[in-house]
Image (cartoon, rainbow, N blue to C red; front, side, top):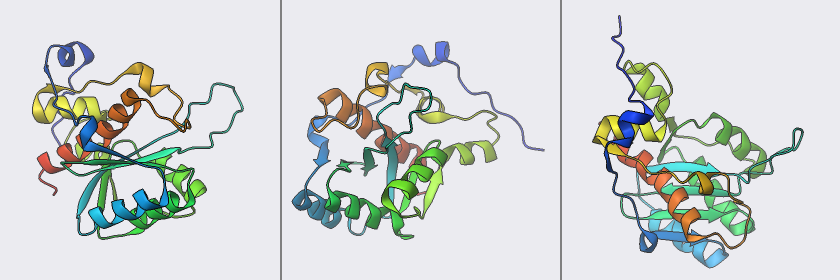
Length: 198
């Protein structure tokens, strides 16, 4: 029988020291064909990436999401935020998501996968939902990035509520959005490695 480990609650996490995040100069926004080509070159040969997507929130009851609007992929040194307006950016992301050779690790990726199939026409391969790993290791509820960072590093992952619900379809993303999006992917990769998977 698997023993069950408790997941830290909000109050416990609030007392922890902040988790070190990527800062702005470690984040590349990929919005045109040249940037997309360079990102593919730089990511050639990586074996694992932190992975997440963001979609513009929908507020009306029957409003369908047109997301994802951005896809985030991160190494330990650098995060790449692909805006999906440009066809070459979509193609570059599709190449990275389709390859079996690169593990894409993230949290709660079921919805992301459906949206990516719909928007990019590719079924992502090599995707690892870290919530599944934590469940297999005896954590009952979905861990999410906050809980995982608290468990693995004894640190508090800072998430801006304002950035969560901001407009990810915007051509000009704000600095706070870039930092939020990049670090979701970065933290997932850190957790993946700390779990001894990479």
